Length: 223
Image 1: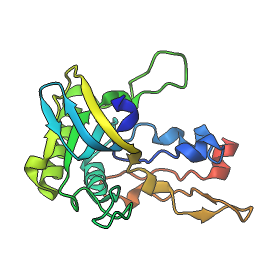
Image 2 (image 1 turned 90 degrees about the vertical axis):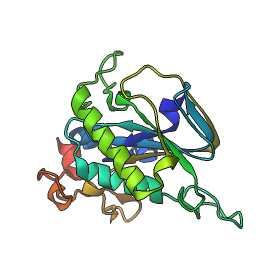
Image 3 (image 1 turned 45 degrees about the horizontal axis):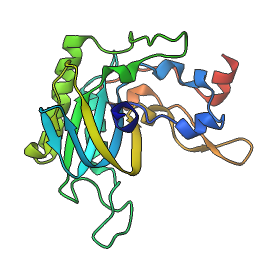
């Protein structure tokens, strides 16, 4: 249940709706599969088996890819804390972030978010960062979250352990975050004059990233 509700991947917010309606072919994303990810859920409560628990706030599952860096941590942590998923004091929806309501955040490392399930029925986890490296970057992520917010309102599971995670999703409200989105989405208009489509920005525009060859919807279709 948690896997569906909250995930953290630093580099791309999946275009789930666009992919469902066929705007973006799957191969358009082939070069972004090892990014850091995050799915964020609005909850009234969440807990990890006698380790940590929170009341109102966010449940965040964090997945770290092979080439994720502290730059991904910076982008993702800021986005999670700034995302307006709560109502304000007047009951107006989508007006407040977790800091505005003095909410809590429960983070759980989730390497299975990096699974490749396109071929066959057995998940392939080669895009997930190695155990020790991901432990270090995940720790960096937690430190950054506590630095940007109130430290004791950031709770954590047990890295690498088998855990039972429970939560009550309010809504339900679920968001998938991925910082690599900002490398290639500019909101350019479709040539048909209708819906907006993606356009690649140089990876070098994000600190700590090597330069990559831009991928456009047209070139993806031709590949």
